[in-house]
Image (tube, rainbow, N blue to C red; front, side):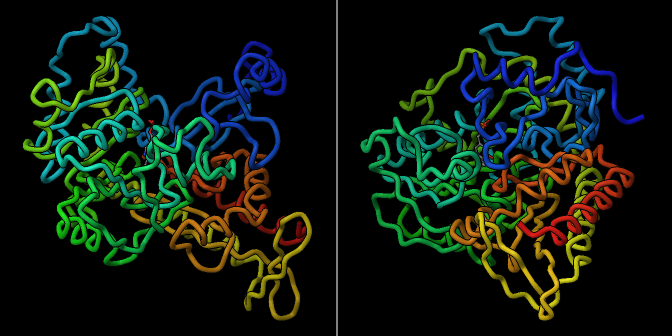
Amino acid sequence: MTDRAPAGGDTNEALFEQAQRVIPGGVNSPVRAFRSVGGTPYFVAEAAGPFAYDVEGRRYIDYVQSYGPGILGHAHPAVTAAVQQAAARGTSYGAPTRNEVLMAAEMCDRVEGLEMVRLTNSGTEAVMSAVRLARGVTARPTVVKFAGCYHGHSDALLVAGGSGVAQQGLAGSEGVTAGAVADTIVAPYNVVPELDESVAVVCVEPVAANMGLVAPQPGFLQGLRHACDEVGALLLFDEVITGFRLCRGGAAQWFGVQPDIWCFGKVIGGGLPVGAFGASREIMSGLAPLGGVYQAGTLSGNPLATAAGLAALELLTDDAYQQLEATAITLQEALEAAFEATGVTARTSKPSGAGGTVLQDADGAPGVTAVVPRVGSLLGLFFTEEPPRNFDEARRAADNGMYPRFFHGMLRRGVAFAPGAYEAIFVSLAHTEAEIEATATAAAETAHEMAENPA
Ligand SMILES: *Cc1c(COP(=O)(O)O)cnc(C)c1O
């Protein structure tokens, strides 16, 4: 049993047609549109474990997993039950609840140095609020970010963003005034920038996962810590992807570097809308109602989100993280083997038409070169020879025309990766040997197809 009976007689094509009439681009978040890979998005009717099913009944082994929240796989029974029970008790009160306290305590318990957190409704809100707090407590204006890192879609942080911003080839966004970004400085990833005493906060994805997957070079995060300390700037780890995914304590624990402020999202909501930011008691005391930095939310700490988040965190034990990483290693090896088997030995790259790149070995036999960077359970895929270290290198690899062919080759074979070369690959605890093996087979066939028919 793989595919299912179509739901309600809709086709992807018909729904997309209708969607484009009433929703800009037919999607509620640009990365979901297939603009950078071409074609029609599949509309999901339901999902379970490692699988998503579209409205036509087609089954996909899903490595999108909602771009991170699906760490347990879709519709995990524990999360579903928690949400159902919570919903029956009311969906929002506008008064504090016990689960908010449990959620905050659980996060502080896992992350060393994290003493207080505030919950928000999205990662965007978390980082936006954290930056305001950093500026408030330091009484300084400047924010430093790194090209290719995505910190949500608030005005000040949208410059040189990864993810959908990169997919659209945008430097930033129209509608953002020069004033809104006047105090934002963009630096290249993996180089410790020079700071001065105007800097309130340095924002970084400790593993960049919105320009494909780009690992921090040894010493980069430590270097940032040191540079911030020298000038009294705060260091902010945007752990919206890495938090509670790499290990119990997230990237800070993984790399042994403690930031001043953490931002979280994705995993901690169990698939419901959520975000959080936190820091030491001293820094967080700058926040209203204790301090003068205002931040709020009608639905923040929502009962459904905290119920789902607590249920998810409870299952994310050390054993679970080991299993997740083992799954990622198996997938990494399978993808690498698929492309190695296309027969590339010596790699010379020669540009061909339509933005594509044909990679040939010394005898001129076509092959496809790919690298699969990995940090813990996080994976990336670039059609290039060396793992990119920054946005320029990532962009060169992402825009060479290879990814859309890989994407569609896999999708045709029932395996869904993100419809854009700038996204990470998300394995879940629900992906078993069988799904990884099926993915390996599909990847081998797709790699072969790509090598046989160069763009
Ligand atoms: C997804 C993401 C965000 C934004 O989170 P939303 O919930 O989509 O607003 C911020 N930072 C990083 C690193 C992310 O991956």
